[in-house]
Length: 356
Ligand SMILES: NC(=O)c1ccc[n+]([C@@H]2O[C@H](COP(=O)([O-])OP(=O)(O)OC[C@H]3O[C@@H](n4cnc5c(N)ncnc54)[C@H](O)[C@@H]3O)[C@@H](O)[C@H]2O)c1
Image (cartoon, rainbow, N blue to C red; front, side):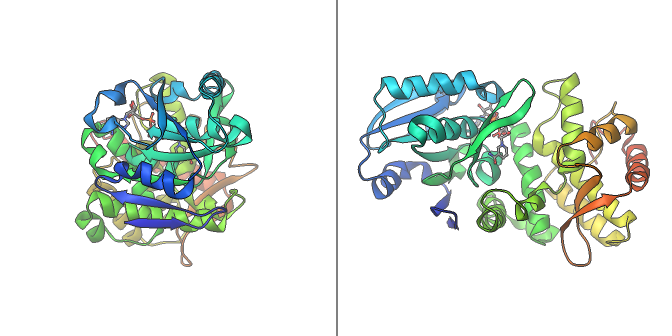
């Protein structure tokens, strides 16, 4: 299955079993002058039988640290030095093979090396397939925060191979499913459709939404904001849990909680009825996602975090469903959010650890 992304320049996301074998053909079709390729990946991934990628070129494999530790300026420098040492030219390509941390890092190194060389993304987590590898956002972290240095750099193409998902740990799978739940809700799909969908369909529907929004808003000036559905509370939950336990929660798990909360805020504001809340809960449950606040988070600290979230600016902003579909709603009374959160926290008591 191919999902076109109409950016400048445009490219396709190919989804399906075995598409990782298409790297050489993609590079030959889009960069006929390329002679060399740098495949960027992490050591743990190289153990898997699927990790060998043939670019059809003179290729080197560069290992970066696994997970978020890859996303530093030091790693960008290390990669660019390795590109230069190998004589990678502007005609050549970088291939990112891994989760979102690898595609973010390798994409950014490709964006800045020689002021821009081409990158092909071969995402290996669900989250990277539906989100990180598509849309052109690349970047690394600073001590001051995540993704504070980066660039827009659209890939030559994205090859999302559903076969590699067989080895993905359950936790990482749930993280991707949180973003998928968001996309299916934004697309207005119902819980029956979610229950029937296989991985390829779950990914493709999510990508169709992302591709459409990215094409309308390549540099994230407006329409892409809808993709923040579930992220206002989700970010707060994620950051506060991770401050206490670096392995406490994955991004998409926090988004699932944020989605369950956002629809409850929408209901409290009279924008949707209880049936919409129930349908949200059914979709989250169908994907095996927990929708309750993790234990130990207080309403006060969550409110304080949301108020200083960079996307909140001066008032509380949520992407919310309503009579005219989903929209970014600004200026929400903090008292309404606090009351909704107090109810949500009370409902969550004792349920955070096990879900349901
Ligand atoms: N650029 C964007 O638009 C965008 C969007 C969303 C997220 N992100 C970024 O993506 C990153 C998170 O990405 P992620 O969730 O993919 O995490 P990740 O890249 O850290 O990967 C998670 C873990 O899964 C392992 N893994 C990857 N594929 C596997 C497979 N097929 N089998 C077994 N193990 C596998 C990795 O080795 C790693 O340990 C964050 O840094 C986030 O900021 C970027």
